[in-house]
Figure: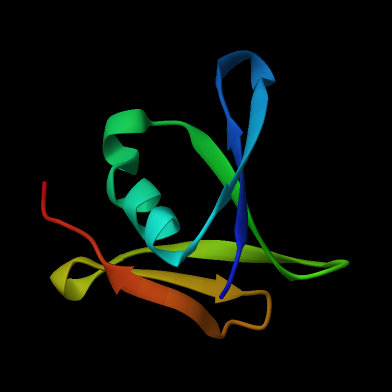
Length: 82
């Protein structure tokens, strides 16, 4: 199972790190328009190996995608239309 480290950045540059599984990350991004915080995402599934992951943005039909630095989709799932 993949594990994602989400570094949440609030006003004043205050940072909190949250470890999430696939469904938690999809849900976090799905409700992001309500939260409005900045974030960085890292794949920390493999011990000692941290890889930056990028949220691509909403795709057609509420698809949420994340890509690695090589541009490959590493996670996708469906959000809800708010």
